Amino acid sequence: MFQEPEFVFDGNARTIQRIASRVQRVLVVDPNPATARLLAEHMRPLGAQIFAAPTAENAYAMARAVNPQLIFVEHVQAGVDGLVFTRKIRRGDLPCREAPVIMCTAEATAEAIFGARDAGVHEFMRKPFNLKDLERRLEAVTLKPRDWIEAVGYVGPDRRRFNSADYKGPRKRKADALGSPAARLSQALRIVKSAAAALDVDPAQARRALAAQAAELRRVGEAVGDPRLIQAAEALGASTMTDLSGAMGRAELIKRIDALMGLMAQDSAGRAA
Image 1 (tube, rainbow, N blue to C red):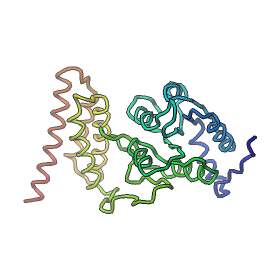
Image 2: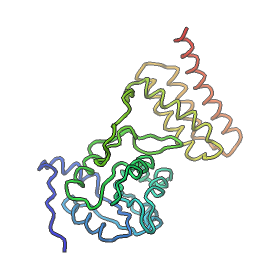
Image 3: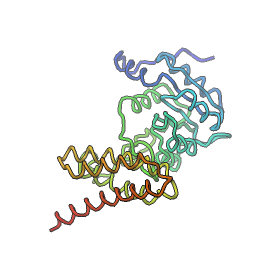
Image 4: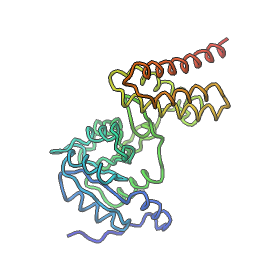
């Protein structure tokens, strides 16, 4: 028998409303049905619909059907490998591929926490959890959004801001100026380079990564007032929309990538001189 929860979120009705609007459809991937029941009880005041799946295979089919706004997933239990499931969601074509994922486990080791971060998990929660634990994770994923990284080796929220309550290490690299145009430009160009190299081995994700970085490079160009960067980014973005199965489409995309990288190399050489 579950006790009626007191779900307060610091008593701020506006905060509760903001969180509730972002978690109306919740998928729980866990072979233990008690976990789904407990989350349903705790989140009832938010009006959330809870969809439970005992295996990763069931969960992926359910995610396609209900398009969850939030996913809770077990780390590793029978029928569920939360790391594999999260990577599949992140690198797939479902509308919920960017939905926040909160990983739950009784074994909150450093290896498990870092593995969750590198799989694209937003938050990590130790079992058994209480209302305060859940409140902190929900606030983090709904009210404190993190930049989305669309690369090839990694797809998910910015790992430099991973903020598990169980993680006691540094929160981000000290040298990073995350919001500066220079840092954004550098990261986008690194991803473009790695995506170009992955066109043969992972064409779908490579194209998604290139399209995302083309949009980011355009924003950087607009921020610094560089019309050449804007033009090169627009050309790259247009090329990602072409059919890459044909030689001409692929050749045009490579041409746009080379032009962009060449432009950046010229600028670097000019600054060095």
